[in-house]
Image 1 (tube, rainbow, N blue to C red):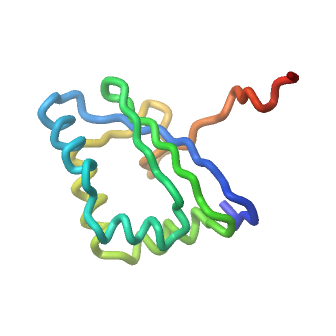
Image 2 (spheres, rainbow, N blue to C red):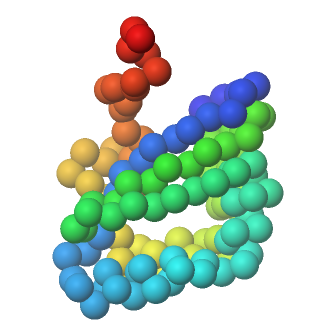
Length: 120
C-alpha cells in the first residue's frame, strides 16, 4: 500500500485457535500489550487500533494518520526484534482464516456498506 495523504481506516480479520484457555490467555495479553509494541504502532502512524472477537473470529479496526504506509510499517516491524518476538508469541493463539492469502496473517476485509454513502 502506498503512503496516503489522508487518514485511513483498515479493517482486517484473523482467526484464533479453538481453545478456550488459549483464547483467555490471548485476551489477557491484549489487556495491556507490551509497551514496545504500543510505541511501535504509534511510531508508525497508528492512531487507534481495536480488536473485536466473535467466537474464534477476530476483527481489527486500525485508524492511521495521514502519511501512513502499510509497506513501511511491515518493513519496520520485520526489523524490530521485540515486534518479531510479539508476533511469534501471537502465532501460538492465531491461525489464518480460510480466505487468508498465503504468507499473510491479518487479512484485509472488503467494505460492502457505509451509511455515509446512502442518500439522506
